[in-house]
Image 1 (tube, rainbow, N blue to C red):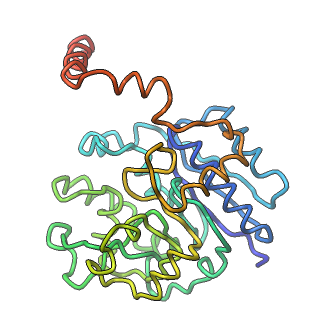
Image 2 (cartoon, rainbow, N blue to C red):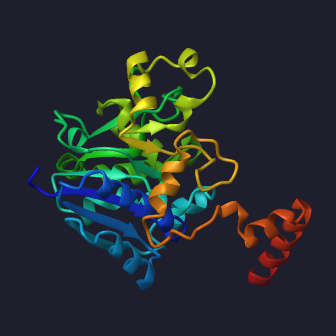
Length: 304
């Protein structure tokens, strides 16, 4: 592969450590691939940037830091306060990057092998190549055809030429703004509503989701074949730590948890500890819920 492979991450400051692990795993397992890695963010300090740039030493990798305003998605963030603004940044890809195709990756992933097979996929008429998110049944709320499948937006090989030609970015943002009650996962629901099944499925090994390790998964869902599940569990290319429990949480029991820590040791964040064992987190967890509510009300009154 001689042409540069275009990778995009989108993150806020809270996920920079995890982005570092994802980036080093990508470079370590694809040493023969020249990359252009674009990082869309709103809160990186010069020190953060130096740490990210340090990871690329010895690799054929150009880093592009694309800084966006934290106010861009203030309205959407108000409608969906459970989600950080950073999840919307991937929607800016068409206006920030001038390429025909890009591979978008969430920051809570580890790359465990070569991405060449994935990156070289033919699009046909599809907007993205992706993996199905199992258990979806909210077609009516998202105004999707009943036969349309719903994909996970944490790994998307994006047909950027088609996104731009069809004005996908504006359509998705408009849908999220105009249908707040239908949205469970803001960017993902918006993308699926507008794309409405016009995407191409690739093997599950390219976005191994945590749910496939849950008890009874094979009996509950039939969107993946037994062979596909077996390959994804045993030989994943991209491990996506989906769900609320992450490998940087002490009680997390993901079977590939150790890989996150192994790659993190190869970054400037090698001395990091479990996020839920940090003093500030432990102190916060000791405060009774009713006292937290009282403090929050007092602070709101002071800033009103």
